[in-house]
Amino acid sequence: MLGSAIKKVIGEADRPPDRIIAALDGEAASLRLIDLPAGVEKKIAEVLPGELEAVLPFDIEDAVIDYQIVGRGESTIQLMTAAAPREKVSERLRQLREAGVEPRELAVGAAAFDGLGGLLGPSFADRTVLVIDVGPSSTDFAVLHGGQCTFARTISGGMDLVESGRRAQLGSGLQRTLASYRAQRAEEPSLILLSGETAPMESARQWLTEQLGIECGTVPLPSAVGADDETLPKYAKAAALAGRAVARKRQLDLRQGEFASKAAAGEIRKNLRLIAICSAAVLLSFVVSLGARYRVAKAEHERLSATLAEVSVDLLGEEVRSALHARELLTAGPRIDDPLPRFDAYDVLEAISESIPADIQHDTRRLLIEIDDDGETGRFEIQGTVGSIAERDRLVEELQNHRCFADVEKGSISTAVGDRKDYKVAVKVECEAPSSTRKEE
Image (cartoon, rainbow, N blue to C red):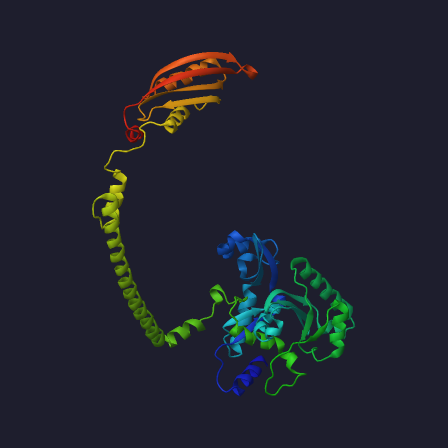
């Protein structure tokens, strides 16, 4: 029956379809929302099996898995994941092959309505809508936000519950699913779009509005030959599958790994000559662009070299056209006597800081520094607080070891707060070597 229907549809088309997209029944797969740290986004494929292993009703090792990102927080990303046993995927593909088709993609249950995003038009781009399709024995429940499917579930029970007088059971299942959605997503649906055989029934739409408290209408599909406004909503899921062909966002597809479609490789081989011509054109454009950039860069280099030559004559006394040579001249320092003092107060501060042992708690109370204009002689007096006389003596010994401190005179010492010691030291400064030489030593 499936094969006959497919042959009839393809036979009535003007030309064979470029791409065939099918779906796996939602009851054969698991659709879940998973939150992950944003830092693992590039490793989702490695992390996801471990996250799903504990919640799937079948072995993760025998499952086909795919995902799409449906939300982002400050530190997390939210995924809608699909997992199905390999045998279910294999069986579905086998059925389709026997019917004479090889689908490029295999959507999953209610997530197949993702393709409606490109068909609903701009009026639904900023809205959140709930799509419900009541089938013979199951019901698809999907939420589209901004045209993307952000939540999808397949509920057991459909028209079989309605026909057997258990409509309340179906209503309870829909209410629980909507509550589950609200617990995981912040966007509130403003409209229900009814799809499938029940879509034309006004009573069905009213019943859904009563059950979920949201206005219910039908999927506003584009007009099609041979279909009126009443019959169009029945085929919303088929239209959604077709709409996936023009979607640009990543969508759930169970044709992964060993089930990956070979049609893409066939298309590449078929258009290999065209690809080669386009590649040659791109390569030629790249070479021309590279040559143009080289000429621009060369002209800029010559201009900068001329500017460097002019500046180096004024500042370095020598014409230089190489940046490396100019750096060497700058590092070597000026060729005139340095007018700055050889040993100034900042050098004294640095020397004192280096002389205080790291294990001594030292508090400076007063520091007086006197250095002559040449920076060769002078004196400084420091008053501070240390823990003991031994620590004062260690500090004096370190000061005496400095090459610019000629004479260190110990002054008075007294007891401060907490048995610490106040001390006073006077030091004579004699430093003949230039400061640049001192730093190199």
